[in-house]
Amino acid sequence: MPKESGIGESTKRREGIRFLTGKDRYTDDINLRGQTYACFLRL
Amino acid sequence: MTKTRMTVNGQPVSAETEGRTLLSAYLRDGLGLTGTHIGCDTSQCGACVVHVDGKAVKACSVFAQDIEGADVKTIEGMANADGSLSTIQQAFQDHHGLQCGFCTPGMVMSSAALLAETPNPTEAQVRHYLEGNICRCTGYHNIVKAVMAASGQAIPAE
Image 1 (spheres, rainbow over the protein chains, first blue to last red):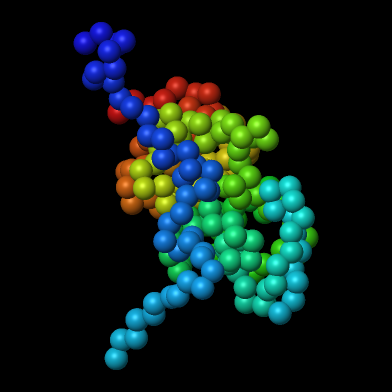
Image 2 (cartoon, rainbow over the protein chains, first blue to last red):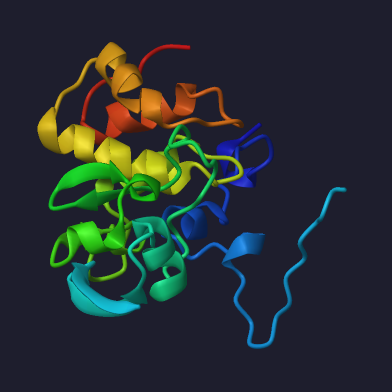
């Protein structure tokens, strides 16, 4: 396939940038005013 | 509660701490710098590695009050002043050294500390140095490739 068409080429992930700079938001990184937390009590 | 002051990513900062407040909590909760991740409760995973006075340190294993006044660098401080990625960050991007990204801040910080000490490590030295950083996704090979590339050396074969 000719390179110019893009077919068959790898694409670079764009989300890698925010993981590499600490700008990601995993669930424990979320901090909204008034947010609630769940705790599981095992009896 | 006491106010604990230090320098983080070049900026003087201050946040309330108790004696038991870990550096990881100080950074994440006190300063809102959530790039430093908590992946375990046992000091094993390395997702929390930061630089304290130039040395790679697991932020979960240091009390914030014990490093009052120190110069701390986190993943948020690794990019260049103009916003472009540092060499090591760019190498991780180019060589697909991350998938879910959770271990990545610790991998980048540990790798940066390695290259500061040993600018041209062998593959074996890279793998040994990163033994304190656990990755569930990549199988480590592309991480090692990224570190070798960041050091300007040839990338190990498959």
